[in-house]
Amino acid sequence: MTRHFLELSDLSPGDLTAVLDLSERSDPPQVLAGKGMALLFEKPSARTRNSVEMAVVQLGGHPVTIRDDEVGLDIRESCEDVARTLSCYHHAIGARVFDHGKLERLAAASSVPVVNLLSDRSHPIQALADLLTIRQHVGRLDDVTLAYVGDGNNMAHALAQATELCCLNVRVSSPPGYRLEEATKAELVDDPADAVRGADVVYTDTWVSMGQEAEAAKRRPLFAPWRVTAELLALAAPDAIFLHCLPAHRGDEVVDAVLDGRQSRVWAQAANRMHTTRGLLAFLLGAS
Ligand code: CP
Ligand code: NVA
Picture 1: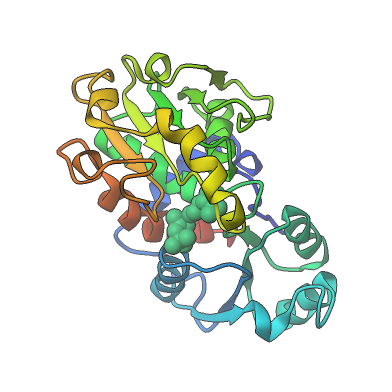
Picture 2 (picture 1 turned 90 degrees about the horizontal axis):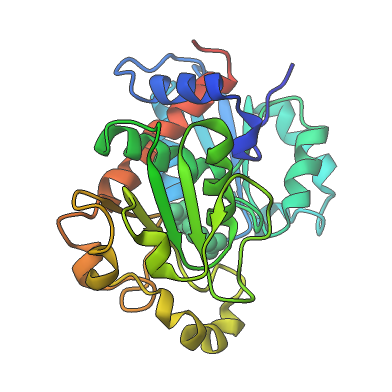
């Protein structure tokens, strides 16, 4: 059976532990030796493209990155025909798309694993790196409280799904009109201070995701009370860590004193993108 990874919920709790354990292995299984992975991007990327390309190399494989103007999902050719074509040459396909439905259609037509490299609905490959960072820097995943403060977007969606996979408690606080709509075990909290109080992890993301640039001026004043400042972070547990998927918009969703402060683990988190993608691909391609 071909396993795809479009949502964090595509993994069972046991699968998640296996992926995180594989991510920490110092001898990457050479599951992609002599094989390729196609990486399709409809949106820009720094971390995802570079970390996935290097993860593929570490597994013995060859990444081929393809910009949207080269393949044109549903423009030059249908998603299904792109998936069928790339399945002829590659042993895995990754895609960063606007419409999550395109990922589902790629997966339905592909004979090799399809991995979500970010869609408007979810960013699960980032959530894997976040969970490894919490396991390493808080020391556990069970009974950890993560406060997500900001837009109820693709990142909030992916993190909220972690409540179903491990004993992570997730509180999400967003401005009215921008709240997470998904039904998970995540707790929706109106006041960002209430969300952060006593939390082990404080997390935020951009107020304006890729594709929403025209809404920036409208969103900025509405989101200002959800900015992660030193004062807000001080309400969390004394040894709480701060995470951000990046890219950060300094002075908007987070101030320099937090992003560069002693509690920030954002660079360890960014580094883990490569390790967890390597672990995920090894898992999807049958390593144990
Ligand atoms: N966090 C993340 O996905 O970064 P990029 O958009 O740079 O890939
Ligand atoms: N929510 C952001 C995440 C970027 C990694 C976006 O979709 O642009």
